[in-house]
Length: 574
Ligand SMILES: Cc1cc2nc3c(=O)[nH]c(=O)nc-3n(C[C@H](O)[C@H](O)[C@H](O)COP(=O)(O)OP(=O)(O)OC[C@H]3O[C@@H](n4cnc5c(N)ncnc54)[C@H](O)[C@@H]3O)c2cc1C
Image 1 (cartoon, rainbow, N blue to C red):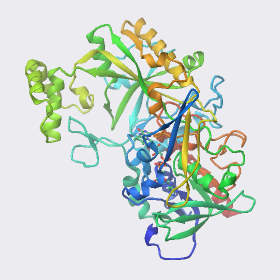
Image 2 (cartoon, rainbow, N blue to C red):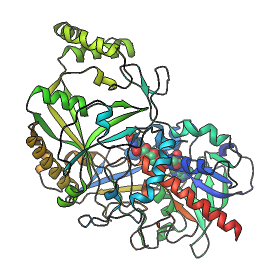
Image 3 (cartoon, rainbow, N blue to C red):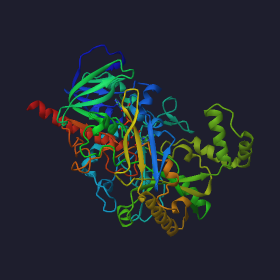
């Protein structure tokens, strides 16, 4: 069932067994796990089913980055631009890159302070398989055996140091004509699933799940001992309608920034809110630093073309696109005291080649139906390389669905160098944090300030990664690596890292831990201090890998659903 709280016409409290706050990847996954059960669920969502700028403004806040001793405001408002506040949450525009975290991501690593989850990779493995179905992933294989299925002879990296690995893109490939899909130049389509659109009907038609749209969680109201949530106060944007939801169990699923914000704004704000007895809510904020940071100059054009073909482009495999990249073995991360880092290799296309120009003309004229930029220059390039253009067009016309996807079926000649791009996990430090500002939003809730700090290990890891890559590329006679200048400077100077990675994958702000001394939730995602309050989402990650978070968020939400089911059934029996 769906209720628009803007039009809700009753002064009665709302009652349910389970109240879920936030309908993004975490909240929708959790709610679906209870559909068609005897458990009554209310899913509280701030937005409606479409974007609304007035509601989005509730996400406004400030971000700062500290480099050395200088704290600098970041003017690009990633808090407003990157998260989305309506049904489906940020998955309304996520890219859909998926990959499970690996064993070492969960482990305590002596060279990374505050690392180590209270669960391990085996504890979550079966939930990843259930998450695959939710996210639409067709295979659970991510290793280098996929080269074989792609008919590509892989580079022979020393696996004790470097491994090739694959991510998958959420959403099954679709034929052209689906207006919701991202469209590529070959006319096939793929789009990451939008949780809101995909699962809306199922939840709106449910008999036991009520979706409450335009309802903002404003205060989790506890008992006097502040160890049990009695109810949730909700309000619509105009504050004309307010109500209370009374439930046995509450789960916060409002995203990596909003989960701590709701806790800090609940109860007595001057006293640090609720579930915050040890002052850890909002601390250990983790961003996902990424940058281009080196160049591989290849031995010859053949090496550049092969790397460009093998690594630069997405490829279709089974029903999804897969995304090859490099990562380092556990032993190598250990020996070199590195954070986990993923490396992508990007060929620099030769923009003067006929094939590049032919694709530009095709994309703009046929697909976008606009007059191409630089039409004369592109036409001259096509005529100059007409033989190549004809051969590639024939190759593309013989449409083999298992062959490489997107531009890789048009082999664009590359320049003889490859840019090296990486995402690195952040070392968790308590000074990197989300806290309340004195400015308030339309609902009277204090906005947030994100104070992002890195401890230098990220830059050291990137440097180390390039040295190891350089040795391997040298050993295999592929080419030589040049490190970008900024990476050789003082570790406190962030270079391009200071502008990237702050807002799209927020994590760590209500971290999972064995005891309340080092985190906010326990191994079952329950607050250490409040017996019926749980949290799901990347805010519970103690460390964040280089891997994008949503696959793990969905797996953990399913794991949490199983736990809550067991608990609620147990309660009803006693
Ligand atoms: C541009 C971009 C690209 C991305 N690409 C990828 C990718 O390729 N792979 C990947 O794994 N991840 C990606 N992400 C991250 C991904 O979108 C998030 O990990 C995921 O959406 C988080 O799910 P969530 O449910 O925790 O939060 P969200 O999806 O943000 O959902 C939170 C929900 O809570 C609601 N809410 C918030 N506050 C309240 C309140 N007070 N009361 C009621 N409701 C509230 C919001 O309206 C929203 O619907 C990307 C993010 C961005 C910005």
